[in-house]
Amino acid sequence: MTTQTKPIEVYSLPTPNGQKVHILLEELGVPWNYHRIDIGKGEQFTPEFLAISPNNKIPAIVDPEGPGGAPISIFESGAILKYLAQKFGKFYPTDPRAQVKVDEWLFWQVGGFGPMLGQNNHFSVYAPEKIPYAIKRYSDETLRLFGVLNKQLADKDYIAGDYSIADMASIGWAQSWERYGATKAEYPHVHAWLERLAARPAVVKGLDFGK
Image 1 (tube, rainbow, N blue to C red):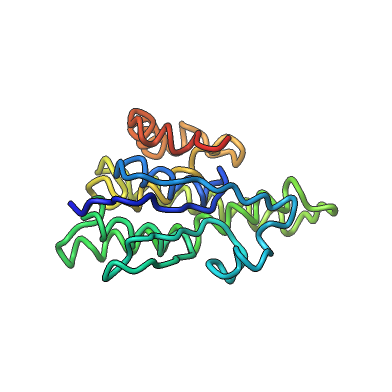
Image 2 (image 1 turned 135 degrees about the vertical axis):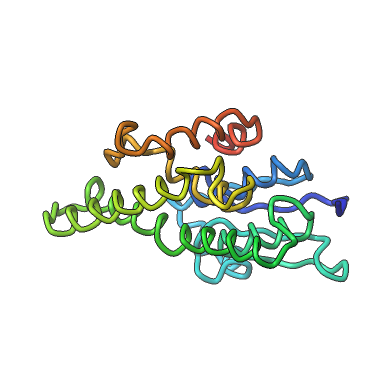
């Protein structure tokens, strides 16, 4: 496993997208520094942050020991997970077919599970105008995605087979199942998976970090 001498600088918040990176870093056991980006104060729009995260979203990292020994900045949570897992040779397989499976479910999360649950939460809780069509649309899609995840976990302990960054990507969103009405009775395999992850100290620490 690659060693890390200088801490990785992490610009983040304890949100589902930030938590996935926190979990991986805790699982890897490498040194890292946490920099809280206060979105309530607009810190995501500062020139310093935009230089490493041009989409003005958390998380973002700077690895002072990047490829060739030179620093590298990375934004987008999925890209960060892949970079770190590949750099340190853990939680991402070396077999090409197994890599495809992890990539499928990592991209499923960043392209669907996270954004759709986020829209559900926005229209159901935060929108100044409650629009029934939007609430139903995103509520239905949320439960459909929980169903996809439940089916995937019916015959395996972890999403892509072995424990991987695909699991870390989804746990922060899935742990709020009660908010979305994803009952244990209807999604038993998701709940069993959540219990398995909750038994991992790094997952617990990563989810709680920065709160």
